[in-house]
Length: 212
Image 1 (cartoon, helix red, strand yellow):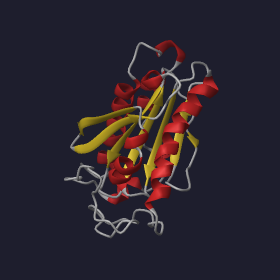
Image 2 (spheres, one colour):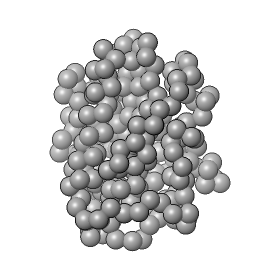
Image 3 (cartoon, rainbow, N blue to C red):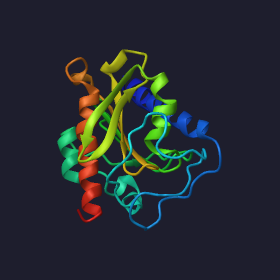
């Protein structure tokens, strides 16, 4: 059961990996310490945003994605609130996309992944390459002023197992939060709602890092 939850959420991430792979071109460099949205051309040579993705009107400084999500994407108090325990964050980086942290309750199978996606075209890549694969596709109200979409490519039990929320930090970068429900929550909680709550926590911490 625990492995199934993990494979479902990793499957959702794989759709984003596909998005990065399909974008073509060279790999952009990681975020610099400069503030504001990146104005450089995306890997595809297209103008951001595209594919129907919303523009990030009030981007955060790119420097908020410096460091690793295991070291501040979620506070200890927030992790305890999510899991009712304190699992250790584990580096689960995706070289094609960026640094990722995994927290898992081994007893229940509940899982949270936070990925700083810095090597794709932001929400444009998600809209262009993941929307057509998604079993669930749900544009969300802005997460503290930042555009977001919930999506799931899980085909095992539809949207009842896992969901990913992608939040546009700038037009070029996203934070992707995936949630796999614990065994006791299956059929009782919408994983997209849960992922949106966790995404809000992450954005709160990134805004604090930006001094907002």
